[in-house]
Structure formats: structure tokens, C-alpha cells
Amino acid sequence: MRLIDFFDRGVALQPERPCLVGTGVSLSFREVQRRTHRLANRLIASGLKPEAAGAVLSPNDADAFSCILGILRAGGAWMPLNARNAVDDNIAILVDNECRWLFYHSSFAAAAEEIRAKVPTLLGLVCIDRADGRDPGLHAWLADGSDEPCYVPAGPHGVASIWPSGGTTGRSKGVMLTHLNFATMIANFITSMPYREPPVHLVAAPMTHAAGCIAFPLMAMGATTVVIPSADPLLVMESIERHRVTTLFLPPTVIYMMLGHSRAREFDYSSLKHFIYAAAPMSAKKLQEALEVFGPVMAQTFGQAEAPMLCTFLAPEEHLVVGDPVREKRLMSCGRPTVFAQVEIMDDEGRILPPNERGEIVVRGNLVMKGYFKNPKATEEASRFGWHHTGDIGFKDEDGYFYIVDRKRDMIISGGFNIYPSEIEQVIWSHPAVQDCAVIGVPDEKWGEAVKAIVQIKEGGEATVEELAAFCRQRVGGMKTPKSFEIWDQLPRSPVGKVLKRTIRDRYWAGRERNV
Image 1: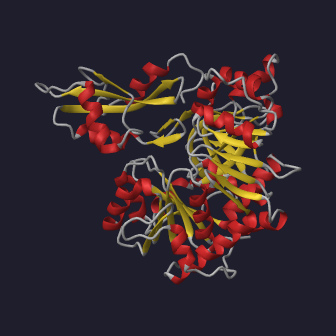
Image 2 (image 1 turned 90 degrees about the vertical axis):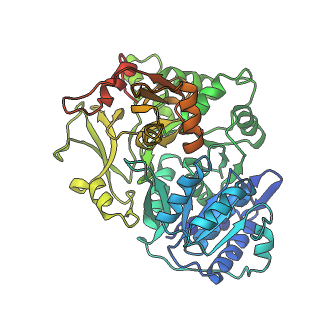
Image 3 (image 1 turned 180 degrees about the vertical axis):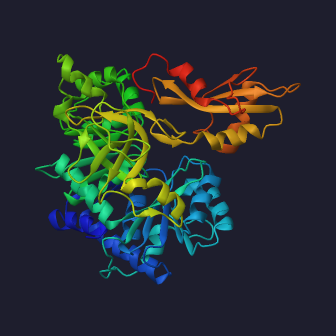
């Protein structure tokens, strides 16, 4: 099945049920389906070829989500762009993956002009919420299209999405996900979290990440997808009660903010069936508090762009271990392998390790990507010994539960977003007063990990932490700018002069059960 066929299954099950609900918008499954045909016919007439990339740059928005479905209907490969990225980062993603079409929200009008000038492969741009300069607004653009049924055939190994994933140097790689990859993800989701009645899905976290990804299995079950502008804690809690939400995904940092809100216990959460957390480890203490506030509905998944969303799963009932010292440790686990994924622990020589030995978490099966777009070297590196290498270090216990304890790659996960230190280090190194630096992730109660920069100033140079922060913010944006800076006289080094980043990192993670 093509990815869009799962949406059409939802149409067949619940044609008049609300499909997409947003600010001032409520569209039934039948209405959204009609719009996707119109979108697809316009894209094809404008030159979009099968598997060519079509991107959406927007905050959470119901109309923007319909554009995603339209790209899929046209046979294109959906490319999600992080709205919090610096403009240059998104331009690099669009250039590297040869994007052909862009739908953007008017809040990114200035960025769209830069993109138009610097992405030579683009065939056209459409502004989602209004006309913008030379670009038509979505609704006017669709008015000239046909809503005749559009069918573009695709095999199971055809590319349905090109998902940007950071590289070890910070340069994004395009993860090619096939229709079979998504079908496997959907099968894993539905076998892990079945529903007797159509769910109600709240998209509060960015729809470019897990919150948008899990819309596909839920839509296949006839789910109403409620899209809110942001993961504001109060808005999330109000929306759960107002819309009788059954399912949502949030990174731990937002859950912590909800638990810390003065009104957290005022709302009715009884509709919830699965409150999914992922993207970063969650504090066991906070997890117990979440069970008290939201009920026995917490569910954890582990995955990544290259093996989307559900490599492992920790079910709600597996969270009900408080008071049982033997089983309580499972709250530190990311669960056991899902039905359609093989997960193991591997050493550097390719040997599968027995329980309780630490190594890299590896995955194989139809969930794993086709490869990186036009990057065979990176594809080969990630698939050594016939397994996809996640870059996460962990172990499994005797009962098959997996635990993430460290990260092999030099990456930080802050608030659910992947941040690659080398990119930030390059910026800090470019400051005229800086001799050397190291960017690491340090423990943070709110973000899980916070970006921290340790800087060594040149002899005779001068720079304050405030100046360095402003210097970074201007060049990499607020999300990647370190939350804190420290200036050291000397950075620890190996005998050959290499900065010992692990030594620096250990100073901040000492005494903890896991280093992520």
C-alpha cells in the first residue's frame, strides 16, 4: 500500500467524521480527500514528478497538513522542514535533496524569498494562509484545479518521504523512507496501540516530527486530528478536555512543564488512552507523577528518522510497576521490540551481545530506511553488518527490555530536537577572540539536555559569555545557541592535542544512571 492509501482507509471508514480540526477550520475526511485530489492534480500539472521532494514550511496548521497529504497523493516525497531551524539550514536541506515544490506559511515569507533565490530546483511556491507577493494563496491556487480522482502508482520501495536527519558534522542527510517503511510503522503502531473506536489525536508538538508521523496510523483508523499552534502547556491541557483527546505525543520537556503548571490537576483527562512520550529519556520520578496526574495512559516509543517511531514500545500497563522494586526499574526502559522490528545490542565487531552487556542499539527489518538521498557512503556506514546502527548505547535485560544509557554519536537531544555540536563549534571558532571550544549536552530538568559551550579564549583576546551567546544566536538561531557558556583557561587534551570532550562531559554527568 502507498502511504496515502492509509488515509483513504480512514475516508472509507468515517467519510463525514471531522478529519482535520484547527483554528477556525473543521474538515471532514471526505472534504480533505477532495482537497488532496485537487492539490495533487495541480502539482502534477505544474511538473512534480513521482518521488520528487515537496516541502512544507509552517507552524502547526490544519491547512498545512492537507498540503502534506496532497504531496503524497501526487506521488511526491514529503519533506518536513523544522520551523525552528535557521533559514540557512533549511535552504541546505532543500538544495541537498533537490526539492521541487514548497508550501509555506506567511510567517515565513521572508525565508521564502531567500529560499526562492537559493534553491534552483524549485518549480513553484504556494503560501498556505494567504497570497504573498508573487506566490498565490493555497485556496486561490486550488480553485483552478480539478478534484477528479488522482492515482499515481507506487511500489512498496518507492520513496514516500525524504526526512531531514542531522549528520555527524551537522550537515543534514536526507532519509529516504519508502511506502513499505511507513506501512511497517503503521502496523507497529496499530498492533501496539489498538482502538475500538475512532481516536482523537492532538498535534501539539511540531507536525514535522513524531506528532505528524503518528497521524498516519491514526487517520487509517478514522481519527480526528486536532492541530493546535504550539505545545503551550495550558493550551494542551485545555485541548485534551475540550476535544476529548485519546492520543497525543509530547517530548518529556513539555510534559514536565504541564506537570509544573498550577492548573495541571484541574482538567479532565479521562478520555486519554495513550499519552506517548519519546525523543528523549524521561525522569522516572516525573513519570510517576505523570501517571498520578494523567492516569495509567503513559506510553513510550523509541525510534529515529531512519527507523521511524516504533522500534520499541513500553505499553501503559508496563508502567504500572510503582511499589514493585524489581519491576520499577522498567520505568527507565524504552520497552521491548515491536512486532515488526528486530532490535539487538551489538559490539564494534558486529557481534550480538547477551543481556546486560552494553553496546550499540541496532535495528533491522522493513522499518529501516531505504538509505540516505544520494549519499551511499553514509548509507553503507549506517548499515554495517546488515543492521541499522542507531548511534545509541544501551543494553537489554533478561526480559528483553531495552535501556538507553549513552550516545555513541556526538549529538545532543534538547527538548526532543537533535542538535549537532560541531555546527555550533564551527560558529564559536569563527569568533576572533576564541582559541578553542567544546560544545556538549549537560543534564537539565526541563530540556533533558541543555547545550553548553566550554570556551578557551586566545592569549590577549577578550570576550564575555553574553557576547558569545549573541554571536551564536545571530548565526545558528535560538534553538542551537548554547543555554550556557563557561570560559576555561585550558581545555583538557589528549597527548596528540585533541580536546577530550568525554572528559568534559563526564564532569557534568557524574553520579547519574545514564548519560543522556
